[in-house]
Image 1: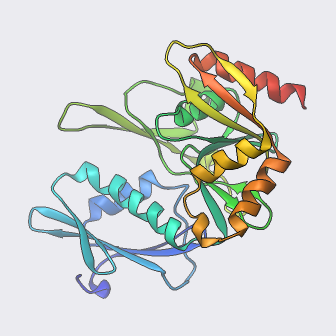
Image 2: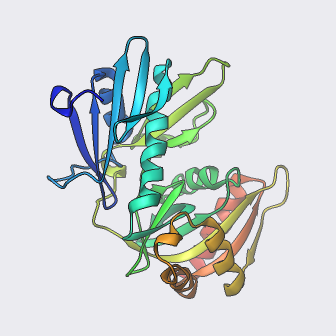
Amino acid sequence: MTPTTALPTLNIKVLSLPIEIVTNYEPFLREFCELTPALVSPANGETPVVRFGVVQKRRYTHIEKEGRTIYRLDKDYTICPILMDEIRASCYEHVRDYLLLHAGAVVKDGRAILLPGKSESGKTTLTLGLMNCGYKYLTDEVSAIHHKTIEVAPFQRPIYVNTWSRPLRKEVNKSFKTYRYRDEGEDRWQYIVPQNGAVMPRDVRWKVDWIIFPRYTPKGKVILKPLGPAKAVMALMQRGWNQRLFTDRGLKIFTGLVRRARCYTLEMGDLEEACKLIEELVGKSA
């Protein structure tokens, strides 16, 4: 890698992980900071645990980790998504203050809803739908559960949507900025990035009052059903990404989440109806 003293350096902290990014490619640096204003914060002089480089060499851009090239790219629009995925993977390896779940999360009136599920289960769609109902965005992909308080912290990465539709209502959209792209296969996709008031403070966490496991069922009925605690714990364990760092404490954290929350499964065919059922559920326990 080119010596770090010769390259612009960005020191950031994602959750409790200090990261260094060095680059000789200014357009990348500008775009990365625009796409991650909520995820990226200053590392305050902490020694980096993971070091990345984004270095242009002739007609290729190299993404490097600890001085070793892990990707060689010839398309600019792929650089930020790939680097963000690598940063997320580094969190799975190093973050020990938070148990990381494959789950969306939103909060309203200080009460959080966790939305665990596998890919294509409807987490992002449901997250966007609930944001239209007045919920604040915490994450649509990586939920960070503090290992002591068992509360959820924001992990506000850009929201990926594989269309050019407008999934947020006008009154919500003003707190987000949309970046649109078109890849070589003519697929259209966009990042929806939280701005200003939609960016959550770093030191705030919320108690999880509901855990809802969505499953997208095209043209199916919308059904919200209670889920027993044992099945809920098992389902959460299947969605954990770094529980191996916690050994036996991982199971204790999952169990604590379920004990504090009300757990449900959600068959989701119609988004508006699904959000209405959730709103009724929350309203009954207000």
